[in-house]
Figure 1 (cartoon, rainbow, N blue to C red):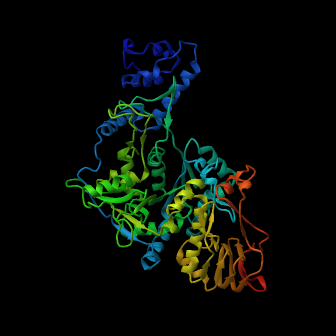
Figure 2: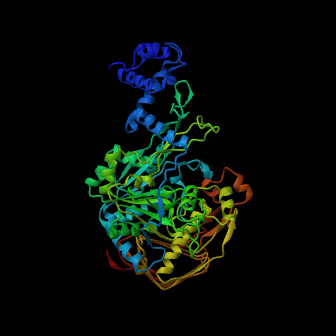
Length: 617
């Protein structure tokens, strides 16, 4: 390869050491020097001084160059453009007028919900699930990957196991393996691989799971987009954002492969939101019925809430954009255009603009076109913290970022974008705040979004399903545990093997009731007819595939049921207590609950006399 620059303008330290590197690495180094990055190759020792570190540095530059579409030079040039706009403080929404987006409101379980869920159930056979899982649980006080945190501690089901259970049940029901794509990071990759291996992929088939690892990007130490160094031969690297999932799906060839296998929709989900599959099928159904190319699963937001608002932006001569506008930008945009009072509530107390929760349904055909056109680089932005009013230097290094929900910023060919709104507790209750932060949010009447509030809502969703089916459900009184509201029961866990949809729940539960701190766990093809579970009692039934179980005229009371115990202050401080309990402040104890396990196929009946087989399998 020919030299990009003459030796007269190359740093002396680089010239003295260039023989250490192969030609392709020398070519990259000299292209970077020509791009105003000569500081990367200065302050080096002579040959023989730290040569291994120099060689590792060039290898790391080459790896980043390969992982980013357009290479390192493309990253630097993109950064310069975005930083120039940041210096001037240009308004990205200049000239746009906000309007309410097209909305399908499924906050109730009416006929529209039923139609959407039925359509989505059929379409799920041609859907792949994309799980964005780049975060550790350090913010929560959990040292492992967030996917390993239990979504509930009655059975101890982790988030990853919960997602896999749904996909396994759906794959069996629909007679087609539902692909799962997991985006990991350098922090979570090894832990995710280890968790899958330890649990034999949680029952998913070989080849059903694809793992894509996200790489870091260089930080920037000024408006001229100089790459920041921690020390000589050591770049400062930072996360690029969850929008990298689009780039990885493109550059790995995974998106094309899925399309060739007949996948028509992608469902993007987050690592610790156990409620997502309550709403996913209905949202996919809305996309099918309304022809949405991009569908945001959303919730009602309260004006001023620190949640982005999904807004349709209209500008003469420009395509309509339906995108997420961050909450700190939405109110000023409204005041400057259509609402002098800003983001005011409607008659129900909500904003006109639904709250973004980063759950997406994307149709594959237009997605592939956009990936090809963009190389998978989706609407990057930079958010530097300037040191002073001159806006030339940073308080700390910045980096380019990208968010997966910004994909519609690239829509210019009439792609159809919509929003499907669900009840918040039904579709969105993430586990992301530690107990102190969560208690503060609860005191301000904001969602705590802790491990305990997520678990409480997980049981709430089960109660919502049972009520919809006609079961009489009486909640236990709310308790404050570590300052966070928690409803201790009834704890209802209707596993995906029991029902994938609300319609199926209604078919399988007839009458009966459950109250207080009662527990109901159903795992398998089970139907309840007039079954009552009294406060504090538990009914747990597990049936193997091929078994059909009918439970009739049964009342459960008196037997010891699952019990919630708050951790003492000593236990909260003790490292002998598992982290997944300390981030909650309680445990749920099994004092010897009687469980009904059906281990053979066939038709079974359970009543006061016990379980007996009626017909062979």
